[in-house]
Image (cartoon, rainbow, N blue to C red; front, side, top):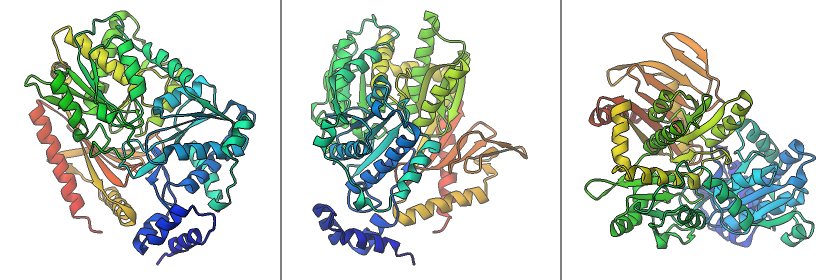
Length: 573
């Protein structure tokens, strides 16, 4: 039996440099809790490094943060030896210890002679991405765990383009991180010394105004009459409120109301079950205010403000939550329609989505003559492609993920809820002047392009046993691939771990980076994907179909879901 975790725990417990509060926490742990806290080191996933705040190598604390920053510092020294003066930008959200972890990150980088630009208060992740390029920095850091539960925090790193590090580069950082074995031996200079040496500079208002000025340029109909549109907005206790409260009124959205109790940067997210706009319960207070104000649309951003969810008033006066795929399709159709009418739609334009995104939006984009490219899950892959296509003479038009992340203009290289809030408001105002809600438009799109319907199943599998179970499920599907699902033949199997595509007895190579993901495509166009989450202890199952009606699509989707779950139930372990 592997007891290395026990040795690690003892090493921490006996080290005189261990923070007193963390020591108390460690002393109170039983064996099971200690094992989970020390059996592994926090890993970089699709959204960087995330974990529960607390004591241990598998936890977010000042020691694991320092270790991560030692790795990032050495990476930057190697990659930009003459660019350290250009600096690294650091932002953070409202979570427990976010400010402390941000300052600790700054102190480590400064100890290596790397200049740091540090926001002095909460800022959205997309503003960080913008700031990296605005300040001509060599990288960026955001302390956030996005929509994870309150006990989590995280660490995301960005390149000089404001794009999260892709696996090839992240692996280099991880290599340097793993060289750092003694987290208690990491020496850092003080905040005062860093400031006195010019290695720590606080930034705020200048970046805010430069970013908002750029965001305003995405408007397609800035002179639209917006006076009749009523909007309710909630930041879910996160970082977007200051910018959105300034942006929307300045752009003419005067009937704009906020959920006051959720504008407080509460690290416990005490008014919601989950600070995730994908979760309908997160809209409960917004719906109450929406009904009181007779709002047309409700919008909610997640804590680090890179994603946004929408709810639209229906004909019964209730609110219907849109999925990420539905909002993406609506945005694509609106943007492409307007740009075509205005003569600004490029012939060489590209729309980006991911391999788990519905083809609804892609179908729409192709009818406008645009190229559609799909990446792995993780917006860093879209950010990477946005830079890559410039050298190919192509133009970024739109990028999105089904998980409520959208990017309208690529002066940001991450998903951007601030841009998205503005464009969704414009889109709703435009259609309201035509006597239509976004639901009316969505139904028109279904009738034109087909009834697409998607679902996501999350199987929570926590701890060591959870990881083992996920591996067992994926191995089972990989070794025993389904041939028929819901009486429909499986036509294509895509295995992203070995980069192979199987179709009609032929094998071809997949060009995307390796990832432990399986995708199955049926002869009727339905598909499903099995993918371990890169940020949470769960297995994600994505299912997409296209039917003759919404009822038909939902029935198809449900039958595929039943097949997958019944098969998983039969897998032991």
